[in-house]
Image 1: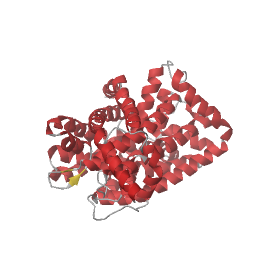
Image 2 (image 1 turned 90 degrees about the vertical axis):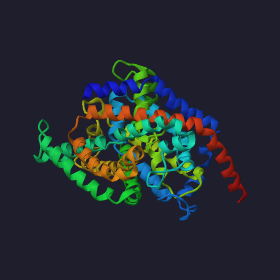
Image 3 (image 1 turned 180 degrees about the vertical axis):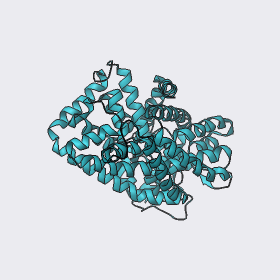
Image 4 (image 1 turned 120 degrees about the vertical axis):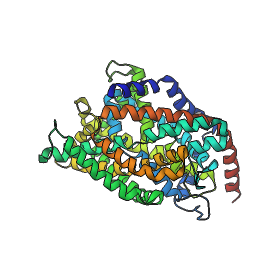
Amino acid sequence: MEAFFTAFAEFMWGMPLVVLMVGGGLFFVLYSRLLPYRHFPHALGILSGRYDNPDDDGHIPHFHALSTALSGTLGLGNIAGVAVAITLGGPGAIFWMWVTALVGVATKFYTASLAIMYRGRDSKGVLQGGPMYVIREGLGRRWLPLAWLFCIAGLFGTLPIFQVNQLVQILRDVIAVPAGLASPDSHFTFDLVMGLLIAGIVLMVILGNIWRVGWVAARLVPLMVLLYLGMTLWLLAMHWQEIPAALRLIVSDAFTGNAVAGGVFSSVLIMGIRRGAFSNEAGIGTESMAHGAACTNEPIREGLVAMMGPVIDTLIVCTCTALAILVTGVWHGESVGVTLTAEAFEAAFPGLGAYLLTLMVFLLSLSTVLSLWYYGSKCLGFLIGAGFQRHYIWFYALLVVIGAVMSLKAIIGLVDGMYALMAIPTMTSTLLLAGKVNRAATAYFGEIQKH
C-alpha cells in the first residue's frame, strides 16, 4: 500500500499540475489586477459582522464560515506537514509553500466567490456550495463528469486519517511510551484504543451538523492560533540570533536543492507545492464548500473573507513552525512528522515543550477532523443523494479508527494524490468562470464607493 500510494502521489504531482496550480494562481493575481490584495481592510470589516444579514441565503455567518474553512486547513498540515516538507524537500520547500500562499490569496478569492455565485440545490432542495455545484450551475450539466471527479476524489482526500494518525503518534511518543502504556515497537493496542476514543468525541460533535461544527470551530480556531503563535514566538525569541540564517537557508535552498537528498531542484519545488496545497488548500476546492454555506447573497464578500486563509495559515502559522524546526537544529536528526516538531519545542522548553505541543495537536487535529467530515458528506450527497449523507457519519467514525493504526507513508500518498485529483476540476472551472467574478467585483465595489 505504501509503494502504491506513494507512486500514485508522485505521478499526480508532476510538473503539469504544478503549472496548473501556481500558473493558474499567477493568472488570477494578474487578471484581478491585485484586487484581493488591495481590499484586506474591507475583508476585516466583513469578518467583524458589519455586513451580516440574517435574511440572506446560507447557513452560517461569515466568521463561522472562515473558522470552519480554517479548521480544515489550520491542522496537522501546519505542524506535521511542515516537518514532512523539510524532511523530504529540505528547507527550500518552505519557500515554495510561501509561493502557494501568495498566489493562493487570489485563487481563494475566485473559488469562494464562485461558491456563492453558483450555489445549487441538493436532492433535498437545500442550498449548497462547492466546486461540484459551481461546475453544474456555472458550466452546465455537460460538465458533470468533472463535478463527479471532484466528489469521488473528495471522498478520499477529506479522510481524517492523517490528522488522527499524527495525533495518536504524539500522544503515544510523548505520553504513553514514557508512562509505560505502550512501547516504541509494539503499540497497536494503544493506537486502536485512542482511535476509538477520538471517534467517540468526533461523533458527539458532528451529529450536530454544520451549525455545531461552525459553533465549535469559531471558538477553537482563534484560541488554537493564539496559543500556537504564542509558543512559537516565545521559542523564536529565545533563538532570535539564528532566524536570519534560517531565512537565508530557506531562500537559497529553494533554488539549489542542496539540503535535500540528491540536491534535485524539482524535488524541492514539488514538495513545497504539495505541502502548501495540503496546508492552505488554495485551488483544491474543499474550503469552498464551507464558504458556500455562508449567509450572504454577495459572492465578492465571501471571496474577500476566504482570501484571509492562506495568509493566516501558511504565511504566518507554517512559517513559525518551519523557523522553530530550523533554529533549534532538530531537522538534522532522524525524526519525521509531528515528532520532529515536538523535538523542536522540547529542545526550547525541556520537560514542557512536548506536552504543550501535544495540547495544540489535539485542538488542531480535532477541529480539522470535524471540518473534513462536512466536506466528505457533501461530496457523497452530490454523488448519490443528500438523503444518504447521514450514513457517512458512521463510515467516517470508522475511518478515524483506521487512521489511528494506518501507515503514515501510505496516508500521505493517498491524501496527496486525491488532493491533486480535486485540484483539476476546481482550477479548471475557476479559470473558465473567472470573468464572472471580475464583473461581479466591479459591480460590488462600485456600490461600495457610492455609499
